[in-house]
Image (cartoon, rainbow, N blue to C red; front, top):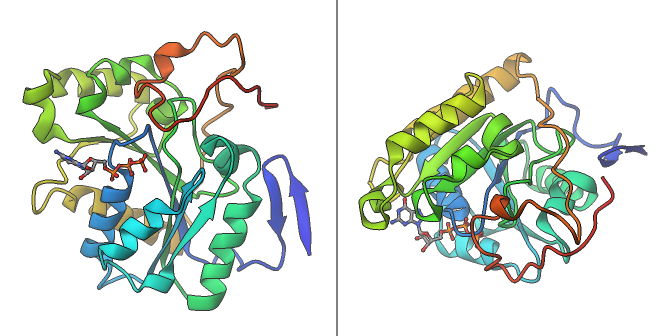
Length: 260
Ligand SMILES: Nc1nc2c(ncn2[C@@H]2O[C@H](COP(=O)(O)OP(=O)(O)OP(=O)(O)O)[C@@H](O)[C@H]2O)c(=O)[nH]1
């Protein structure tokens, strides 16, 4: 059985909420460190939590291949969704392929405590549907420019956790981390932001602690998923060029129109 919702198809025969894994969406612009963050989280949390990963790529399964090559989880617990479309369509507008992948992962290898769902690299308008992710992390990096948090967007403003990655690179690329944290705080209405360097041996510790806290709240039934709201208008005449900090280096043309 399944039900059509605004966000896609929700399968009624999927694992019930209380017994299924917490689904943590991880999104952000291309190359900010989403896969590296998942690898570090799996290394850090893999001994205490049963974990799974679903990756999204447009034309390849590269992120899953990367994660399997890191040996952070048994290979079969890392599955790839090839979206064939704009990444944000698959995590926001029609999440059925991702939902199916998560549910299949849980059926085959469950019970799992947490499934990380990595979005393909997208722009600042992308955010996960609450029908797919119970909680979401948005990843920026210092290399994308220290003015990015100021530009806002649903990931910056309303993700449950904002990670500002690659703080080790900030002095080299002339980014002011304090400014990024200040601008984030102004946009986020009290939601947390963490500066991170995944190059540091212990760099993921605070993000891992946040994931553990979310998982505990999920199990206790006190985690409330927040809808990050509609993405920005996005069409041939879009004026949100500032919202694309990594200049389309995913080969993803932003000239299509989406029905939101
Ligand atoms: N210096 C530095 N490099 C990092 C850090 N985190 C990730 N990287 C590097 O940044 C590059 C991109 O990292 P990925 O984890 O592939 O980024 P991604 O967001 O998954 O990339 P896409 O899936 O292509 O959008 C890789 O070369 C990483 O090794 C960090 O904290 N510091």
